[in-house]
Every structure is written in structure tokens, then in C-alpha cells.
Image 1: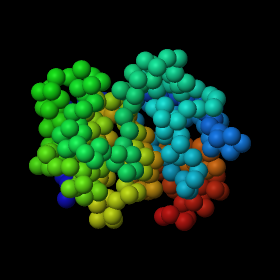
Image 2: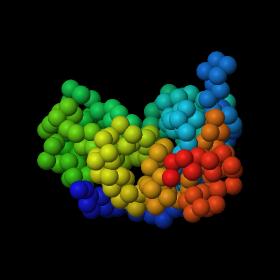
Image 3: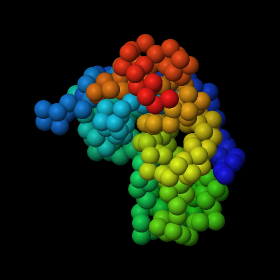
Length: 262
């Protein structure tokens, strides 16, 4: 059981959601040849807010998430996020944006040949210019906060899926991002490991970092998100507060989807 692992002072300065958008997407399209994955997606999220994106498999959710830090290029439209702009105008611009926009993947994406410690210290040293001592201190603090400090010298293969995902979250936080993206962070976990990762995410949401979470965990979306969006066939067709989204869906496609997953 994971309890009380994160605090605002340890990760970032707690702040209420701002009225100013931290993320603003306008008419984002993405195609692979003739296949259109994203169709004029517009999306806005205030600084410090938490957004969940739900929808059926193959609807474009993960692709959209990956456009937000440039892992996927967009065919048209524009994205403003964490003070950066996509498409980028230079290589340095995309590198700077990725330092501000962290990502936690479905399958952890930890470096398998590196210890937990090295997984957390590599990027802060190389990208942020931290000294080895500074990076180690930050890694130890974050691992303590996610309940993984005792595993700091282990390899990822020596950890359970839930433990690896908690390390992956700590690694993303080690870069002190302004925005954190989660791509189905519990989908690769055994059921008994899901709650330990969701507990970390729930506490993290209270620290004031801006979060966008693609998820199938409807309980998490209802209890933690400031806004929930429904994506189907490459379009965001409904974005509302959790109460309205789950209790008063307007689009019949959303109503049908909720009747299948709740």
C-alpha cells in the first residue's frame, strides 16, 4: 500500500489551477498517408489543472498525447504548451520544450541496463547541467516520495510493474517539468499493482503540476480530473467537468461508451 508519498514542497510549488492556458491546441491534424488519425483537435488546459482523455481503443488518444511534446509531428494546426510552440521553429526549441513537458509511458521505458539511480540522474546531468551530487540528491528525494528509495540500486528487471512505473514517474519529475503527460500509465500493470500507481498520481495532482492523462481508469478521471474529454475517430467530441461528463453526457456516442465501461 502506497501512502503519503508526494508533497507539493518536494516536487513543485503547489498552486491552484490558473485561468491562463498552459496548453492550447488549435485544429491539430495528423495523418499517415491517406489515414487520418487526428481530425482538427482543439484542446485547452489551464496551468495547474488535470485533464483526462478517454475513449475507445484506436481513437487517437495516445497519438494526440505524443504530439504535445513533439514525439509525433503534426500535419497541420498548432500547439502552444509550456511557453513553447509546435511545430517547432528550431531544434533548440523542441529540446527546450521537452525539458518542460515530461512523459510517462505505458511500458515504463526505463533503461534496462541502468540502475534506478542512473535512470533518474542521467537526464538532469546531461540536459539540465546538474552536478552528479545534485542529481543524486534529487533522485533520492523523489524515490523516497514515491516509496522506491530502498530499490535505488536495483535494475528495472528486478522490480514489479507497479514499482517500475513509480520509478518512471520519479524519473519524469527529476526534470522538474511544467507539464506531465501520462499515456495509459496503468494499462500494462497487473490489477493488484494499479492502485499503487494511481495513489502516486492522485497525490501528484495535488501539487499543482499540469497533467494530461490518457486513461481507462474512470474512477480516477471522475475523482481527480478538472476536465474530462472523450475522443473518438480522431476527434475530441466532448470536454466537460467530471460531474457533467459522467452524469449528463450530451453526445450519444459518449453515453454509449460510458454504458459499456462503467
